[in-house]
Length: 456
Image (tube, rainbow, N blue to C red; front, side, top):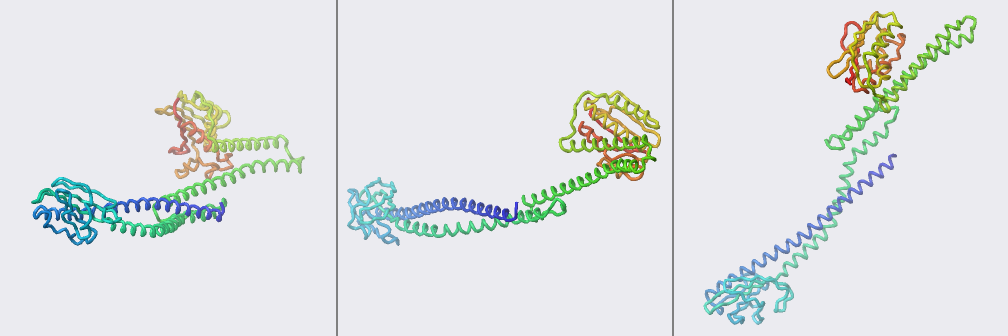
């Protein structure tokens, strides 16, 4: 993806994130504003109702002591917002606050003495259009039962709610704008390390995998992503380097027999009188056989890398395979071959196991000074094959590297000895495909390779 396309996509992500955050916050703020307005209205109405209840209780106390005619019904500091009436036993207005002295009874409720009734009236018969919270309390005075009515206007509640709604209406879009801008900025800050990683990755090519993405100092998912990408780049660099070495080594190995064949034919073409045809034929066929073995090994490793080693499993007598290799070495070499074989049967691919054993035996015969020992035995749930030679041995520091492809140790373990450095790598691939392993164990002198396979 190009830098411009990536920037456009990042910008789209920032916009979508800001819009999503703004929508969520907008819905939450709207619901909170509605709940706050309703709660404030309820609390204000409850407060005013409490004032009306206190006024009714104070007047009722006067009525209980002095009767309905000697009572002061002037509101205590609430002005015209509180209306008070005292009704006698007949329902006649015996006393009223100055604003409603000529008004009829405010409500029709007539509770018994000691009982209080609370109602909300949207309109009272006093010429007021405002709603009122009304407290009606029954009381018994010297003249008999009476009723005290205390009504408090809810106009202040309406005005307070109107002011609050206007303030919320003005602040709501401003707050949403701040949320959108903040979300856009924060999303950009959060994506900045990702953009830095993208720029660094865009500069990495197949010919130079040394660059690594910057790891942000935070300990979040972005930092973990950066570390994972660097680890992946490390693995890619290692795999690429291994592939380059593999191709270079394979080209070199293929070039050597081809050069020998070409040189032989060029000499035969230029100086046919001095060429021994039988010797030329033998040399060329030897190099062709070397080419065939090398190509076969390369194809095996390529297929195993792509899909693993394909096995056609069956019961295999491992001691018979090793005995056959011992006989072959006795016929084809001057080495002393010592074999100690116990009957051991495993489940595996007979052809592939024979190939692994041949590679091990050829490797031992190639570097042995005079003797090769072959041993087959059982060890618990495993079959163990030991191949030991009395050659120069394998240094401890090289016991893992010797199984890499095209690896030949210094000294006698070189191309001159006839190996391409693939035999042990192929043998280990086959062993691991069968659930076993191949390793170098301590031995003095010489090399000691041990093949382990699970028993049938």
